[in-house]
Image (tube, rainbow, N blue to C red; front, side, top):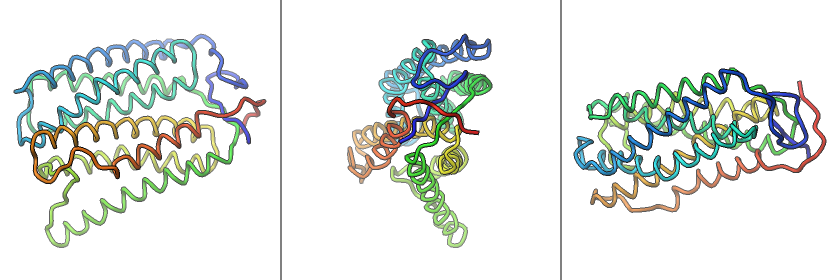
Length: 289
């Protein structure tokens, strides 16, 4: 089986340190450090300040579950990936990029929530800094790859996830247009939040899944890079959902269980896809064009 590798320099056989990064990459590291600090502050405040979030009990519990996941999982993963990137790991670069996308998506829920809270500007800053850091990193990320058959089944999986999401939402939205039945969520969130979730998923989740899937089927270098980053980004947010479900159940919202084994299906699939792409035998490299 062929090996895949990503690098901003001449592709090596394993994952050695890169050459000296440019100023935009170094700036992205500093901005990402600020994202870590602000995320810790925002998540800690959300967890320990009972009156920070307003609205229905289910929405407050959902936000606090997100805060817990960001604090105990999102921040550590981002920190480890950032440290690996600084040390020169090309795989860590892609995990780092994926976690910046996770940060943008996660805090978009806070920024675009119709209700104000005292940390609104802090949440806006996290989204803006994450997006800026992501953009700067992508300007210096150059990719070389060696084709592997495994890339195609991962590509098929990501396309299937994108099609399933688009199909489920499409059916709900067409039914709403035809009958007036408002789409619902697994958690009994207010309609405005269900609308926001669908909007973010259809613009920030389904398209990257589909693009990564197509590029992986073509066994391209950017398919490999986008595939890893997308699996990290979407897989990490599944931890938010698991934490949110638990907090909603703890708040006593009727009909919501603390956990559901079905919720583990997507994270397990994405983890398997991530490991398939990122872990591979060391063999001589040949570039693809």
